[in-house]
Length: 154
Image (cartoon, rainbow, N blue to C red):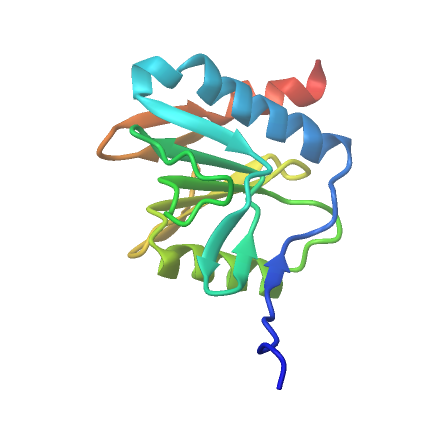
């Protein structure tokens, strides 16, 4: 009898269009420029093992220092950022967000380039960033949405 069959599931979506790509770059640049001040590591396209044989690849993820260095990360990021693409469906996004939160991600930010809005998901709250700021606590981080969306107009 042969070795047991191992099944792994890499869950991700198709690559985005330009607004998606621009916002992904803007988010990563915002955090990268402030990595020492916030004591963080920012990663794009990073594979994260959220359960045995199940993987996610957030558009941008932020780890508090000391950040893990494994090729495939097995610890939850502090922030997982997902940027909407035209083909995204809310039911699939909610499943992904629920999986991130169950895995231990503190903040999931869902950014919509078309509507220029963002929603914040935590283990206890869901809210729209109506004041134009994406925020975290412990550590306190604020990201002005207008600075990110400005990149769409440049």
